[in-house]
Image (tube, rainbow over the protein chains, first blue to last red):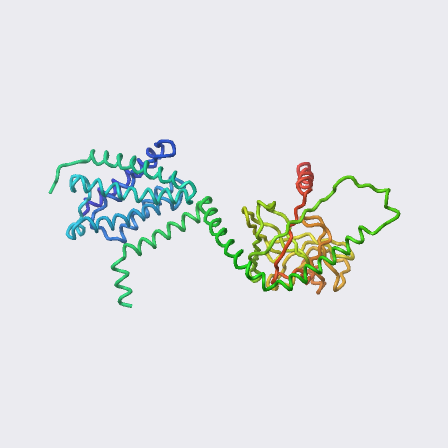
Length: 171
Length: 277
C-alpha cells in the first residue's frame, strides 16, 4: 500500500517535471505537441475510487496548467480522461480486476490491452484538450489534425517510457 | 428520493465528471481572456439573433405609436428645413458655400434589447461594424439622448444607456448655458436623471430645458430633459439638479447613432494639450 503511494508520487513528480521542462519545448511545429504526463493518471491503480481519481486528475491538470499559463484547460482534459478511463476499465476488465490495486502497466497487463487503453484514452484527452484550447469550431479540420498527430506523438512517447520500465510478468 | 440516490451512486462516474468538468470549464472561461471573449461572443451572437427575431414581431405592436412619433419628427424637420430654405433675399447670391461641411452623420438603428431596471443598463442595436458603427459613438432617439456605443460586433452593437452608473454626458442648461455633466444619479427611476457640477451661483428655473453641450460625442442642442427640482447641494459649491429625461427608455424602438466625422481630428488636437501640459 505504502509502496503504491510512493511509486505514484515519484511518477507524478518525474512526469510533471519532464512535461513542463522538456516536452513543453518539443513539438512538430504547432501540429503535434506531446503530453505524456497523462501517463501518471493512466497508471494509477485500477481499483482507485472514482472520486479520488477525479480529484487527482483535476489537480494534476491544474499543476500542468500553472506552467502552461492556461488555467483550467489541462484540468478539463484530465477530468475527461479520468471519465474515459473509468468507462474503459469497466468495459474491458473483469470485476475482480477493477477492485484490485493493480497498476495497469505493460508487464502487468497484456500488451494489446495496454496499447488500446493508452491510445483510446489519450485520444479522448487530446480531443478535449485541443477543443478547450481552440475554443471554437472555426477551422475544425485543423484541430482534428492536431489532435491526431499529437495523439500519435504522445502514445509513442508513453510506449517508450513503458518499454524502459518493462518487466516480465510478476504474477 | 431513494431512487434518485441510487441513480447518483450507480452513475457516479458521470455525475462526478459533470461536476469536475464544469468547474474546469468555469476556470478556463474565467481566467483565459481569449476563451472568455469568445464564450461571451458566441452567446452574444445567439442572444442577439434571438432578440432580433422577437423584436421583429414585437415592433408590430408599437407601429402606430412609432408612426406618430416619426410623423411628428418629420413635421419638425420639415419646419426646420423650411426655415433654412426660406427665400432670403439678402443671403441669396452672396453666400456660396462650396464646402460640404457636414459634421454629423446619422445611422438609423432598431433596438433589439433594452433594460431599464438594472443598476447598469445596456441596449442592443441591430446595426454593427458593417453599418459603420464604432465604439464610443453617441446614440440619440427622436426625443433625446440615449447613450454611448460600448461594444460592436459585425451586425450588432451594445449601448451603455444613459441609465448606467458610469455614463456621463456633457450637458448645458438652455437659458444660462452653464454646463455640467448629466448622470443617472440615484439610479432607480428610468424617467429621472441628475445634472451635476453646475456651479452654485447659476440661476436655474424649474422647467428649463437641458440640452447637450456639444463638448462630447453628441451634436449640440439635442434635448436631454427638463429641470424638475433644483438646489440640492451635492458638494460645497455645486448644485445637483433633478432632470426629467425626455427619452422614453421604457419603449425605445428606433434610435440614431451619431457618427461625428470630425471626432478623430478633434481628439487628436486635444490630446496635444495634455502632452504639452
